[in-house]
Each structure stands twice: as structure tokens, then as C-alpha cells.
Length: 531
Image 1 (tube, rainbow, N blue to C red):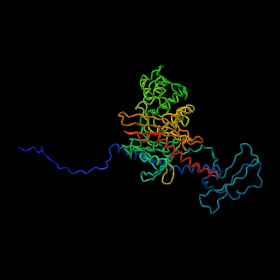
Image 2 (image 1 turned 90 degrees about the vertical axis):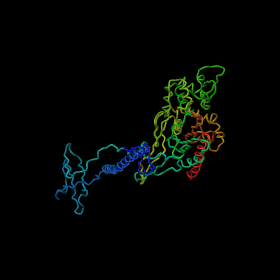
Image 3 (image 1 turned 30 degrees about the vertical axis):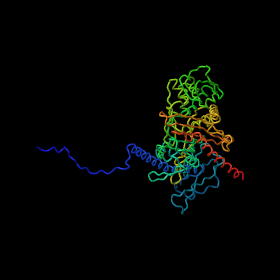
Image 4 (image 1 turned 45 degrees about the vertical axis):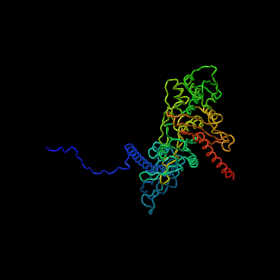
């Protein structure tokens, strides 16, 4: 009987080499897509620079043609007999005009332009008299349409693929280089290096899970600061562009704007509520008047962030359609054009009254927003209701200094009217003066920098489901009282067990540093300008 050789059989396999740095499938697909877009970018660039000489040649030809001479050599023409070259002493009236080509000199190289002599036209010429052309002339220039302006070689969508977005994390320089397929390019950002470095030094990383600070030039959408911290991924995460933070009471800005336009609310409009300011029970949504009813102005309800007031506005007055209309007008549920991939902020509405109250007051964790989008909300108020796309790249140049991308102001839509934006501006100013942010800006009226500014904002706070994190928001603005300089700010901090530096305090640091440098520079430039 033969033994079973399959039982207990050991086969010595060749030792496999350890695979190191092997990308997973997702990384491989990302790299493959980036290389494909890079090749497309190089082809597009080469086409652009290849067409540029042709465009310049066409412009040169048009310019020379309008100047009265052909930009190209006139074809060589056989010279007439010498006796035909001399003009008669007298020419009868009405005789045809003769254009005679002068013979080319013997020493002129072949193919050189031939000079054309054009005698003056006779005083009178009968209608329909023929004109004899001995030598061909350049045709008279015809009116042509203006050459279209050359479009940018790259778009924001291209930059999202070509540039690793991790390069923008906590920059301390305004520009950085990058290479692609052996070619070197330079990215010039809109960031303020001094402000950026200052914020990174002042961050309290001990008592928080996340910090995100965004400062924006509201009129143009240019980012002046984008500094963040993520304890779980400190080197490769940028919480400033992550749309995972509960909006909390920041959404009251949207509800207030809708109430001003749809319901005709003003800062002095009187409203009522029962129960606590920061709770939201179904019983608080009833429209009832009793001895427990309290009355409050619309401005104070916003400044003190009174949940039942805004819950009733959303559930009983505005409704689902109006809330959704204004949420989308302020950029929710839609893509935002930016040079870095940016997930949209999300709000979800139903027909259930209590859910509408939760959304309108920000008393929920389902409405999420990115800190960058928070700055856009404030910029919209400062821009008179016009929403502008954000941008962080001013331009990109190649190794020869030729621009391949330049940022330009991009107006997205009008969210609210200028009149409504002024009212919301007033509500936000009340938040800093005597509302939920008064502690963070205590004494700002006596500060050498802050006293020269109008400051406003909106706070928000909510815990996560496990209560291990406390999200703390401040979105706001500062603008000169006697000038035009403005800045929009958005800050979110996720505190852990202990509360560290608050969002409003970070916002104050931004305003003090930015306008402190600005006032110093303008004061120094004043004597130079006068001299």
C-alpha cells in the first residue's frame, strides 16, 4: 500500500520579497488620474504657446495693412519697356489712371518688395471709367472682428488635480514651487504670510481636537489666512475645507436673512417665546400667550441666539420652501468653485414642523458646513448680498515667468438684497456689542486698533453625539469706520474635556493683527505720499 503523500506534505516556497511603499488601489487610481490630467495639461500648454506666434503674426499683418503697406513682399513683376515708364507731358481729362511699377534695382536680392509708384488721380473721372493696373497692389484692408482675448490655460478644476492640495496646509510663505514631468512651476497664493504665521504660533493645541481659522477679503474672495490643526492627522489634514462640522447657530444668519426679506422683519420687530433661550421643545413652538411668555426684539433674539424664536420663525412663518431657497442661495447643497477640492455644505429639510424648527435655529447636528463656507456667508453680507467665489491662488507661472493661471473675481449669485444685508449686518454688530460674543470682544471700544472698526459676528455651539467634543463657532467681520478695508473671518474649535481658547478669541487675534499691520502700513505710507 502506497503511503498518502498529500498528508503532511511540506513544500518549500521561495522567499518573497517584502513589498514596501506599495500604493493601495485607491492611491494608484488617484496617481493614474493625476498623470492623465498632467499629460492633458502639457498638451494644452504646448498648443497655447504654439498658437501664440500665429496670433502675433496676424496682429502684425493687420497693423501693417491699416498703415497703408503690405506686411508681406509684393510678388515680382516684369518691368515695362523704358519708354512706357515716362509719363506724357499732358494727359487728357478722363484718361485712365496708370499705376506703373518702378523697375527693381540690379543689386536688390530676389524676392525683395517691389516699390509701386502711384501718380495722383485726375481732377475728374467719368463714372465707370476703367482703372488700368500694371502691377498688382495689396488689397485694401477689410474690417475684421477683433481677435478674441486668449482664455486662461488652466482653470480651477485643473488645479484641483494638478496640485497636491496638501501643499496648501498651514503655509507660511506666499508662494511655493512644484514640478510636473520635469517642468518647474511657481504657485503664488493670496495668503498673508505674517498673519498666517502669527495664527499658527498662537494656536492652543493642547485642549482641542480641531482648530480651523479662515480670513477672507470679502470683495474679491481672496483668502488671507487658512490655518488649521487636526489632532488625529496633524500633517495631512486641512479642517478649514472640511464640510463635516455642525453649523449650529451659524445657520441663524440664513434664517434671519429670509425673515427680513420674506416676512419684512426689522431689528425692532417684537417676537415672543416661552421657556429657556437655548432649549427647543415642541411645546415652545406653540403660538401661545400666557404669564410665562417673554417678549424680545428680533435684534436681541439674534444677538442672544434664542432658539425658540428662530424655531418658530422657521416652522410657523417661513416653512420648508423658503428655508431651502435661502439655504441654497447662501451656498448650501451645491458645489463651490475653489482651487482645492471642497465638499459642499449640506442642509436637509422635511415637512415636519419640529425638524424645520431645528434647522432654522441650528439646533441639530445634520446641517454641516466648512469653515471656508462660513467665511463666505459673512462676505456675502459685507458685499451687499452678493456671494463671491473663494480663491487662494493668485497666479501660476512657468519657469520663464509666463502666466498659466490668474485668479479673477467670480460673482456666484445674489443671495439677498443690499437692504436686507444691511439689516443682517446690524444684527451681527449687536452680537458683539451686547450678545453672545461680548465677552470675547470686551473693551474693544477702548482698544487702539479695534476702536477704529465696526465689528460684528455670530456664534454657535453644539456637542457631538457622544458629548466628548464641544464645537465652538464664530463667524464675523471687521470693517474700518473711516475707510474701506474689510475682512471676513470664520473660526471653529472642537474642544475636548477642557475648554481652551475660544473661537471668538481667535477671531479677535485675527482682527487685531490684520488691522494693526494695516494701520501701521498706511501711517508709514502717508508721509511718503505727501512728500
